[in-house]
Length: 288
Length: 275
Image (tube, rainbow over all chains, first blue to last red; front, side, top):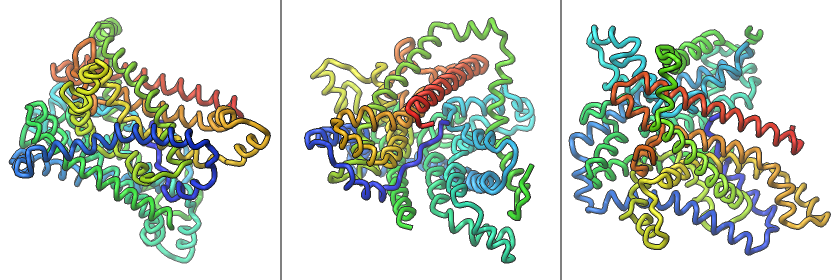
């Protein structure tokens, strides 16, 4: 239910323009004005402000904020988190899409619903459940303490919470597409004697590569940008367990506005790059 | 039972899916239920009916409701404009709609707080001209949640508007219906279920939202403190049972509300003959 709705292809929008332009001019222009002001106020203004604030004290202050040891550590941790979680959830997404779209079995719709579950849970609750598992009072708390393994307030906790949050992204992109594609091409390859893996790499993957890439892109953006869940399990130890979004928060609460916005600008740039790649992928898919 | 099929890899792919799902999602989530067993009914009621907890529930659900309503209204107009009209910069605006999805919530939070704080660009303007303070008030939470909600509404309504057959419109207007009648009797009833879905998605996201809200909200107990923040506060005080009780209650209320919206949607679809 609580899945992220799919954007439609911008190529289709062009085709539709000609059809229904029957609204009176004043209606058309006032609606355009309302929509453009709304989007400008709520989207363009925030985007512009990140860039403005980051450079408000000049480029030198920007660079010195970014080259601080704590900032670099935060960038490293953010990259590490994405590097672990994105491949794992990608492998899962492909396996889940294969099982769900290529076979019929009992409980299939339940499985599909369960995969979406992390989308409908508040980020804070996503962090809380890992504290309940691995925290000092948690199920495995005593055992972990006895063996001197730290998960909560340490890097493994951050990775686990991010794994949970970004769990559905790749699967969600692949399942509808592979459902629509059907199995004919794969069956043809198999009946001509290709092996299972060969069929998968030579037939399935080329057919779904754009959707797969798109899913990986969204998964990565969320993995690098997650705040609520990570904030609960991290413990905010500077230089050790602060990811980039947490580093933004710490700086902001310390009234280090340039530092906060310098780190924020990296994340905003990541968001913009994600959007550009996404639009490019949509065009690629649409023009196929 | 698996279908007899020449497709390979049923057991390994399903096996991996189920095991990974259990490890990453199901087992962690189940702790919420098991932890709540440590609580008897009396203690639970005591935690939930605490005045500060009740206030935070009121703040979270009311701001999410108002924000989802406002976002649905403007999001509908935005989707309409993007699908049916052409204007300069349309492609650019279309791509921007997803920005709130892509922007990390902490960044959205400090940006919105900076814009709407009393000394900020819009905050100052609103105080000087209307005497309205946005930041550190429930209104600030609404602003943050509108930002978060935009793509949910626009991206759910857009495809339905796009697929909508214009020949129904043409038939209606050739039979003498005014433009307004065509919209209210033909177009809107067809798009309404999708709008309802977008509203529900936005509302559900808004209730649980944390990062984009806490900076602008000011987090004043009884006034602008949201439920997710209270969960974090309880955890910082090592009150895991309290945090769990609040979290579980929030989840259950959200699911019940989503269920009600689903039922309403079904009813609307039946009534307008789409089912």
